[in-house]
Length: 120
Length: 168
Image 1: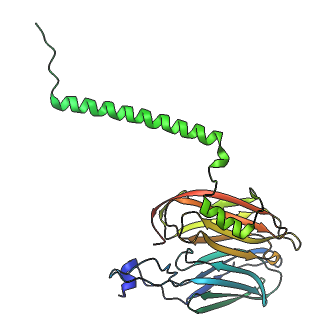
Image 2: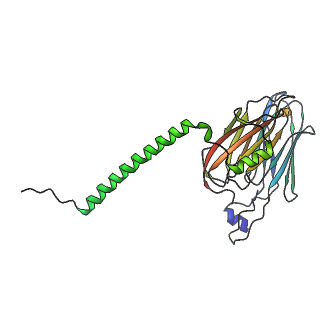
Image 3: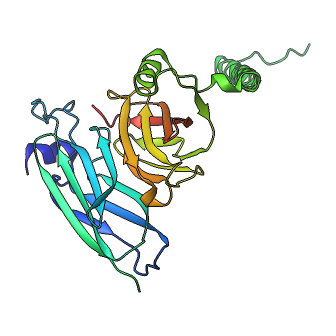
């Protein structure tokens, strides 16, 4: 177990696992609910390990959402967003195209996930 | 001649305690009533932003009026764990090409970073809502502020009671 895991008494959050969830049935033109989840520690930099060593800040600061290659939303975050950041937002499904999300953290970590919006 | 039984020390203490309790309850009731009356008299003063929040708002929105309305903020009033407080922001404002919600902001009065997040939206979304989970250091007002493409600023605020510090 790492110091970090002891501190939080949970599994350590390794950044990287990214998921986008879309509804199973999508009608063309409807507004769908998009849910996105990234594994990330989102350290504020204000906590210490059990040994008293400071845990440096490590958090996602920018998120970009593209639909068919065009940016439809972008988010600026601080470390005030909870660990394993979750966000859900609406999207009008106008066409069959990939929906991609890119998360960028304050240490240069870039995490990307993409799903295809399909009608049926 | 019959004398009433002398009050034992134990029963005296018990009676005094129950009396004090009743008195305290009475006082608490009166305070509640007073608080309700004061809130009723000045409903707008409840979520008046403190100085440090006012500075953040002015840096973002200048001297524009920040009006209450058109924003719905769903957040629990009691958050035992400040590490993860779910919140949902929704608005009934239009989301058309020439009039749309371009920004949704989350502010927490007593967090290390008062301005917690900004969500820049476009009409392509078709609606404006954000669902997320935030950290809170302690009991504080949470503010959801929405900015339209025409420059209007609307808000909703809610006080959240926090037990466990989620920020450090």
